[in-house]
Length: 55
Image 1 (cartoon, rainbow, N blue to C red):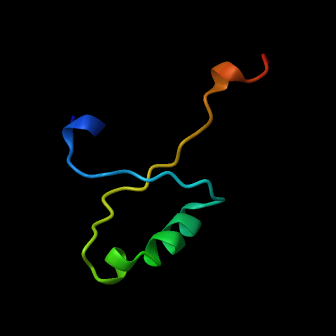
Image 2: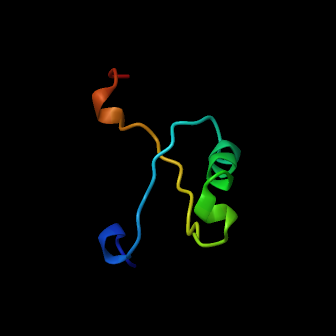
Image 3: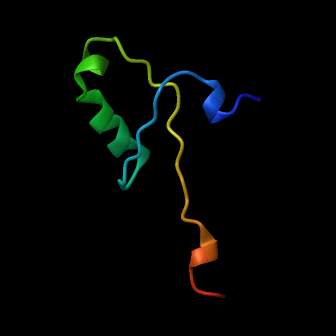
């Protein structure tokens, strides 16, 4: 399985409420509008629980 460092390209991080919000923001980018930018994946992230309160 390829790792992040093995794949050429770039990444962006969004702090939004849903995947639909991310797709909406990406759709406004000029390179996306010109069909010159490929969005390979949208990966939701969760907070790291190690820094949170103990349960």
